[in-house]
Image 1: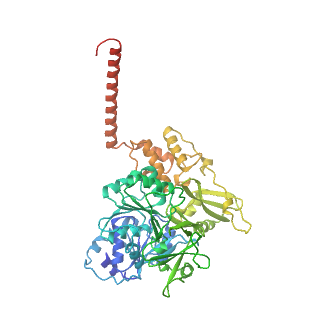
Image 2 (image 1 turned 90 degrees about the vertical axis):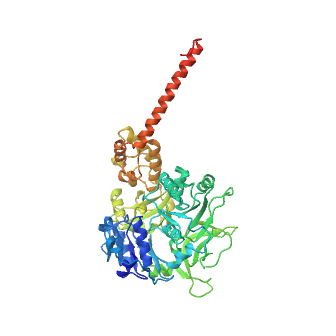
Image 3 (image 1 turned 120 degrees about the vertical axis):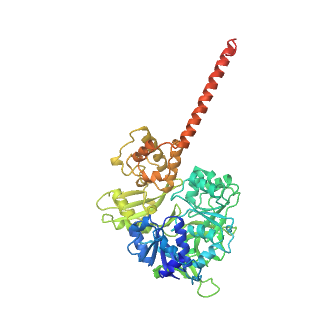
Length: 587
C-alpha cells in the first residue's frame, strides 16, 4: 500500500483521505499512508455530502482511499480515488520491501475535523510527535504485547488514536468492533471472545452499558472513560461491580492529541464527592491554570486551563487567524518559541494537586463524547430563509438525558420541523441535529442585549408531529410506543413518528433496544433493525414478521417441556396428598 501511494506522489506533508468504515482495509490504508510518509484525513461516509465536500477541498487531499461501495459518495473535489477492494490486484503487484518514509516528528500524522463556531468544521493538524507523546513515557495506562485494545470509536474521533496506535505501536492486538453502534450485550460478547483488556468509552456510553448490562465490562483490566464530565453515581457503581478493572478518567482536547490529563480513580471514593477530577498532566505535557492576564491562580481559585508540551497540534489547517488566537506564546517556557493552547475550560486545583473541571467559558459543549460548537448549529439554522434568529443550548430536563434544543424566532410563524431537520441534516452530522425545536415570537434578552439563555423554556413533552399523530392500533404497537415514551420522556407518540425526529439518538436507541430484548427475548432483534425501522409501525411490523431463531425455538421448546414436566409432577403430588389425607393409599 505504501509503495502504491508513493507512486501516486504521497510523501511527507501530503494528505490522504480515508473514506472508509471501521474495517481491516481502514487500518491497512492508515498504515500505508504513514509508511509512505503522508498524513491521513479521516472522512466519515455517514457525514452529509456538503460537509464531506468542504473537508476534502479544505484539506487538499491528493488521494482518497475508499471501497467500491462508497465510490459514488466520494466528493468530486477528490483528485484521485483508490478503491482498496477493486484495485487490490494492482496494489498487490507493488514491492513489499521497506523504505524510509522521510517523515519527521514535526511532520503531520493526521488532520481531524472538529466543530467550528463559524458554521464550518476546522481541521486540527496533529503531528507525529503528538502521537508518540501520547503512547510513550506515560503511566496512565499499561501498553505492551499482552494488551488487547478494542477499536470502537469512529476513526474521525480522536479516541481512535489511542485505540489503534496504543495496540500497534507496542506489539499488542487491535480488535475492530464489527458493528457501527455497540449494544451492551454485543459489546460484552466481543470483549469476552477476543480477550479485550483495554477499552475506551465515552462517559455516556459507559453509563448506558453500566445501566443495561454491567457484566459486559468485567473482563476489562483498563477502562478509560471521558469525553465529558463523569457521573459520580455511575463511577461508584462501576467500582463496586468491576473489582478487577482499573477505571481512569481521561481528559483532553483534540488540539492536545487525545489526552492531556488522566485520573486513575481510587477504589474507595470519599463520601460527599460531587465530581471526578480530570487528574494531572500525562508525560511530556504541562498544564497551567491562569486568569485573564495569564497569571497563575492560587489553589482552589477558578481559572482557564492552558496546555503546553509535545502533544500540541501544529494548529488549524488554513486558519492562521484562529491558530494565532488559540495557540499563544508560552510565557512560562524555559526557551523561546514555546506555545500554549487555550482550552476555554474552567478548572481549579484541588488540595491534592489534581485538577477539577468546572465548565466552559464559551458555548462549546460535549455531548455523548462529541465536541460541538453551538454556534455552528446556530449559523446553519440562520441560513434557512425563514429563520430570523436561532439559539441552541444543551438541556438536561431529565437526569442523564442531555440533548440539544433549538430556539427559533421566525417572522412567519412556526416552521415545519421536518423541513428544518432536512435543512440541518444536509449540512451537519446527525449528532449535531437538535432533538427538539421551540418557536418563540422573539428570543428573550438580558439587560446587556444578549440572549438570556436561562430564560429559554423547556420544550413540550410531546411529539412535534402530534398534530398528525396516529395512535397505536394494536397491542404490539402500544408496547413499543410505551417504551419510546418512557425512554424519550414524551407524553404521546404516533405510530408514524420517526424515532430520531422526536428526540431519539444513538444512546437512547440502545436503551430502547435493551427494553425490546427484555420484552420479547424470543425474537432475534439486532440493533441495525431499529435503524432500518425507525417508526413504531415499521418496527411492530418487523417484529411481527421476524422468525424466531432456531436456538430460540429449541430453548422455548425445552422450557415448555420442563414446564409440562413440572406440572405433571405437581398433579401427582396433589393426588398423593389428597389420597393420604382421605385415609386412602397411594395411587
